[in-house]
Length: 68
Image 1: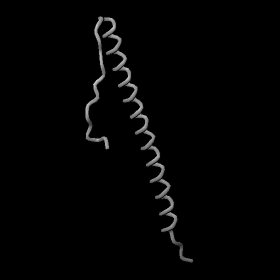
Image 2 (image 1 turned 90 degrees about the horizontal axis):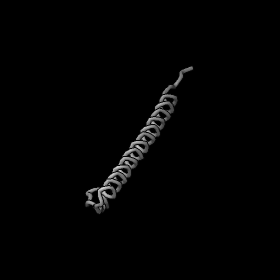
Image 3 (image 1 turned 60 degrees about the vertical axis):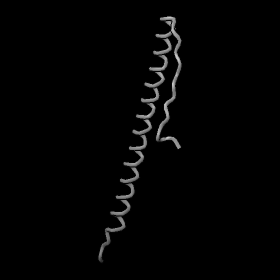
Image 4 (image 1 turned 90 degrees about the vertical axis):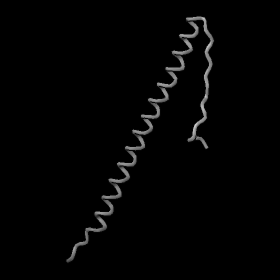
């Protein structure tokens, strides 16, 4: 009886690829959340420092090439 491992290898390859993709997406989401937390912390720090120094602060939004 001839055994064909091609289907098994394809299945294992697809499972591994999907696992790696899911982990990559998870890590990307964690990184985005960390940068977002950092951005909010910086905004808060600038506002607090402005209030302590009796100075006004304002947020400026820069144009981005990434926005559609």
